[in-house]
Amino acid sequence: MGGVGEKGLVLVVEDERPIADLIRLYLQREGYGVQVESDGAAGLAAARRVRPVACVLDIALPSMDGTEICRRLRAEDVWVPIIFLTARDDEVDRIVGLELGADDYLTKPFSPRELVARLKAVLRRAGGTPEPDRTRSVGAVRLDPARREVTVGGAAVQLTSTEFDLLAHLMSRPGRVYTRDELLSTVWGYAAHGGTRTVDVHVAQVRAKLGDAAGIVRTVRGVGYTADA
Image 1 (tube, rainbow, N blue to C red):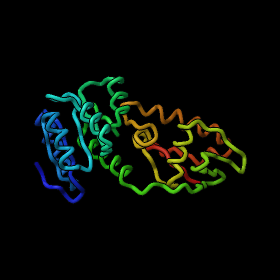
Image 2 (image 1 turned 135 degrees about the vertical axis):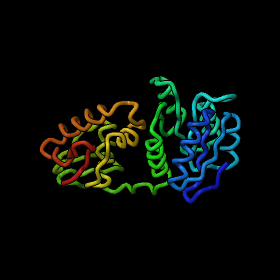
Image 3 (image 1 turned 30 degrees about the horizontal axis):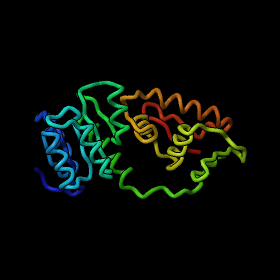
Image 4 (image 1 turned 180 degrees about the vertical axis):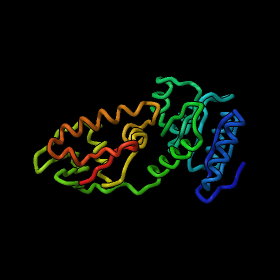
């Protein structure tokens, strides 16, 4: 059990006590209250009872695994942010977990600092005010989120859905530098498990389609990418 904390209560369902204690320590340092359950059925009951701001669920749990907890909560229309933990570094597990409605996925062993960062990211997205469908402009590039249209100097640019979402995210805050992991998590819906090369390939494709305006998407060496005139 734990207090609510100034940033809300996070439910951690993890049957390995050392891992649970480490997660609790790092989350409490960040101002979150933490409730730990070591059994899947108890974890589901706690999620229903305490209404946490987020859940961190191990997949392999006694009585009920984490994916089943997630499935049942989503079936009840409970959309609390969920991060899965698993010892299985398996692509099928990751895809199945995300299709059930999880927000992120970490494979053991993991850095507790990375878990905290991922948690903060999913909470920002879940609790933030939705971006208005306003047109965004950086240099000669103009992006209309409502129409999903991009133009360069008035000429239409054809982007795939993923390319559009990537450019829209970069242009939402011009000058803000996004790491590759952040872009993977936000645009693709998964994090470093998928490999950051995916981001580099898509950035190259976007630049090629922007032609003379490609320079608005800048590489910040050793960090990531930004959109800036």
